[in-house]
Length: 149
Image 1: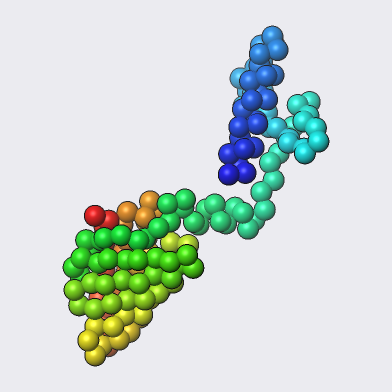
Image 2 (image 1 turned 180 degrees about the horizontal axis):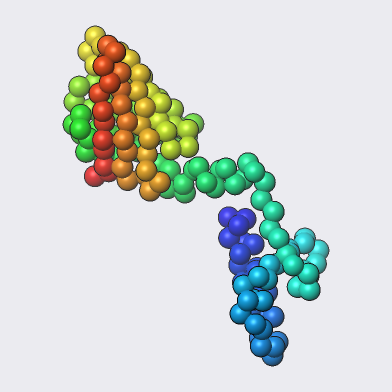
């Protein structure tokens, strides 16, 4: 949201500069940057928007639509995933259940299929409309592929 606000302010300031009657060189316009200061706005000096590494990592790793909840068509049958506010995910599929935690786009889970239990993980695509993953059943890796219904 902060990036959107900075871009909006930058676009407005750029439009104001251009509308002042000058005919800027396209290369100059492309290289302009805008500095937003809480008390004043300066258009005379190049401007940079600083974003902390933590904010960049959040923007890059957690899509706005990062919600795996819903019904999925998978190689192991239909899977229903339910998410709570703490990124805890539960799921039910024809052979069993799973419980795990979503971190960025990866769901690490434990599963139970009758007397079998083990671990697995799903990696969701950026749009959270599909995933690939695997579960370990007695030392054998079973591949999961899924797409949102």
